[in-house]
Amino acid sequence: MEVTLLLAAGGLLAGVFGALLGLGGGILIVPLLTLGFGVPFREAVAVSLLAVITTSSAGAAVYLRQRLANLRLGLTLELATALGALVGGLVAFTVSDRLLAGAFAILLVYTATSMLRSRSTDRAPGLDELPAGASETVLQAADDTDAWVGYAATLGGSGYGVRRLPLGLVLSWFAGIVSALLGVGGGTVKVPAMHLVMGVPLRVATATSNLMIGVTASASALLYLARGAVDPLLAGPVVVGVFVGAAGASRAAGRVPVGVLRLLFVLVLGYVALEMAARALGISLLGPAR
Amino acid sequence: MSPIQGPARDEGPDPTVEQVSRLLSGGTLLVLGLVVLGSGLMIATGRGPLAEPGPALDPGRLVADLVALRPEGVLWLGLLLGLCLPTARTAVACLGFARQGDRRAALVAAGVLTVLAASAVVALLTS
Image (cartoon, rainbow over the protein chains, first blue to last red):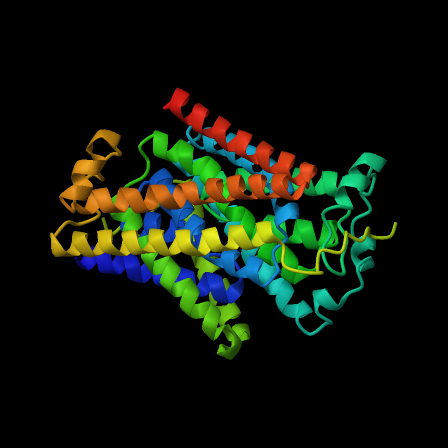
């Protein structure tokens, strides 16, 4: 019983942090299960995928109702993320745990660095306030053909358009691979891809990324399920914890000092990255509880 | 290069989007209810998540486990429904867009369903 409650509490914490910082719970579930409970890496990834599917479905329902998530754009990019997830899910079973732990450590460092960088841009005008073409100087990879432009024109929403669809699809494919290999939603790749590359407003990009997580994660979760990597007794309490944590945190989001929380989270990410790197190198810094 | 403005979709609610949203809301509640029930049964029956190897998915036993209210049966049903929810919402979107005459969006949704089906086939073939 204690382990069940501990798992639920851990999931709750991951859900709270994830929702408050817009990262999704996946980034913390895998380290929690592998480092804290001694769960094998692929089993932890499978549990994380199931948890992010549930929270993404709940969030997507609300975002669609509020007309923040763009269903047509999401479906188009899901073609690429689901293909990437299929590839990633197959690759995940051919590489060693240590390599996966090393890749996860890199993802954690990248996420922590991105969060520190976004902290400094908090004082600048919000990204949503930038004119639609302002990010054009950042990436000049626009080589859209007429056909792509024509299709992209049907994907825009109220007050914004979509551009550089081919590049967006490539990045989405990569996000699918990352999601399947490491059990995360892939928002750290999809949101910048949609916002900075495709010119989608940040709030719409975040909501659409959330919508896409379900399809992306289920494409690879099927592979984990078929290989017996899903333990329902382990997944149950974690899914409940993450869902409750994310739901509660999203209601309290406006009242929490996110700046302090973000710094704390960066420290946690740094520490977890160190642990994951140690695991990748075969050094044990923290004994598993299992 | 100026951004391309999309067609104005804000004249009224999009029926397909509304349907997908309702499906996701109802589906998530059902999934969560089952997973909470399964976790509760796990605690009530003294089963521990890490004390034993997790029960593998056996479709033949699922109904019997559910009838006997065994935690693994209820948890498997909840998790499998959760796993199917994104596919179901893509199917609903595909049909909805087809009914609305948005052939391109319907085709894209059908493409996503094809990739998901391919994933299931690959999973079965390589397991």
